[in-house]
Amino acid sequence: MKIRTVSTRPFNDQKPGTAGLRKPVRTFQQPHYLENFIQSAFDAVSTLKNGTLVIGGDGRYYNREAIATLLRMAAANGVKKCIVGCGGLLSTPAAALLIPHMGGVGGFILTASHNPGGPKGDFGIKLNIANGGQASETVTDAIYQSSLAITRYFTLEAKPRVELDKLGQQQLGDMRIEIIDPISHYVSVLERLFDFERIRALLSNGEFRMRFDARHAVTGPYAREIFERRLGAPPGSVLHGTPLEDFAGGHPDPNPQDAADLLQLFKDADSPDFGAASDGDGDRNMILGRGLAVSPGDSLAVLTANAHLVPGYSAGLAGVARSLPTSHALDRVAQRLGIPCYETPTGWRFFCNLLDAGLVTLCGEESFGTSSNHAREKDGLWAVLFWLNLIAARSESVGDILIKHWREYGRDFFQREDYFIRDAGQAQTLMRLLGSRLGELADATVAGYTVQAAENFTYHDPVDHSVSLNQGLWLTTVGGGRIVYRLSGTGTHGAILRIYLEQYEPDPARHFQTSAAILAPLSRMARTLARLESHGITAPTAVT
Image (cartoon, rainbow, N blue to C red; front, side):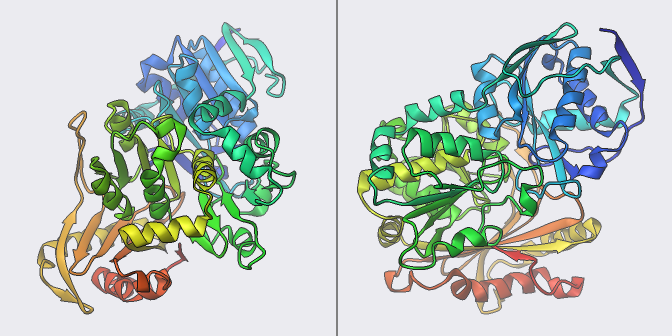
């Protein structure tokens, strides 16, 4: 097939965030917009050519059109083979596992993760590299620089139709396309890590009841295969299991606010025993028990403390890692186990160096992401199976496991407050002014708290010795309090200031108070320090 060279001009807004390029659908539908970014990736990362790429997405609106564009451009840029999930579907963790398994040089994942879908929603594209993980800052910066200088892109002259719903081999010019079952390899990896026989006995005993909410996103088919077909959970255990382009108008984010309908099922004594949810592309998770939602920091700490009960981790953990905003609950377990605990910036790619070097086994973020060295992405269903394995091994409920954990290690009350700021420049100014005052805060008393330490977080990677500056502002208080401020990198317009609040409480008598009650004074301190009201900000947009 004839290759066509198309003249174009740069867009100045194609700088990837912490997990790729995310914009409103209408932005991606502009002439040349998607093509510019794809070509910039091919130009900046020469290894993508002459090799095998893995391609798939979360099924949101514009997914199929984007895959068709991507395949034509891959063929025009000399890619030898593309492996595509049937129907264009491929969860992010499944793609991360497939890339190295298939000997791929990388992959394109089409997702905006937990952002809304549909014609008025968001779309996204990100490049993962040969180890299955997200491209490094060095790579994404190179793609961005390429996007600022682009003058042409390559595609095929003709637009032949690729049958995305037909398993098997197809040809597009000189490039082979293989449409694969997106589920089977992923499930085979999980079967090697967890005690499926023990979990099957739990889910099929006629007494234990679970609900997994796929949020009409990509994990629905995976969850039905794993929980209902392979593990024997009754039909209907998976809710909202059919992927829809607009996620049925919902927000595919597994947190207590956006998944309030699922939480409602767990409010009374007759609720199911176990609940969980995932997000748009399947890399996040929320864990529920009767009357409670497990915070991400607590979840990671519990998994670490009990990893010896799970076959894939019974030999011990090399170390663990968490992002800066994530609670210190993990640190307390790591100290007890005598293993290192690394603190990284937000963004899964920062964990990948540690994983590749064998320094850590488990890692996680406060934004409901958890995973291990089995993949180079966070993995929602992996976390759900880990919890089910623990429940089966300990013969205890989610609540009992969590309460015993707090009794042994103390409880880290945690809360995240999101403040949407329409003007991104104003948000940057707010952070700059707050950062300039950090040096004055040591030993200062603010809103009844004494500041112990305050810094602008700089990350020194222990593997490649790279340095990442300005990764968040943090401070600690006498008595176990901590505040972190950072701007989110996952939005598509304006800016989101995120304030993370944490208070350690060793006294079991206080463990059953609400996070909102315990953290209210610290929240007032955080708002006072940031001088939010002077910027016209009076209340959070969301609290999780």
